[in-house]
Image 1 (cartoon, rainbow, N blue to C red):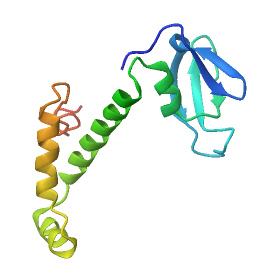
Image 2 (image 1 turned 180 degrees about the vertical axis):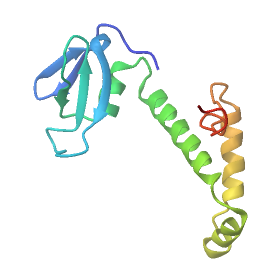
Image 3 (image 1 turned 135 degrees about the vertical axis):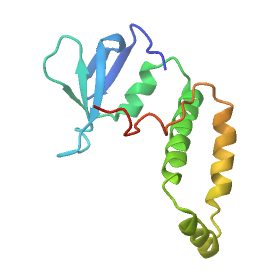
Length: 135
């Protein structure tokens, strides 16, 4: 995703900043509410600004991708996470799930693999966080 330069991004409740000055988002976990959704880090400010909008909506405003491309990128991220999570489901549990409710994890994995194979930017996740080689 590439950030649009010089675009004014609304943080909500009259707070606006240039897209190229926003350096990060952190969702608010505690005391979250309608006026408190996200901490937004701005270049030049020592403390984050509290935004009433979610990081996804602000990010969508900041990127060059249209709504469809943004949704597609989010969908690919979700598929990669599901695929990664399925790697932890053993063969006995897979069979049990298939027999109990008809959900075929092997088939879903195969289909996800086919979709991700068409995306050259996809990096196999297995090796990224391997315990080997850590000091």
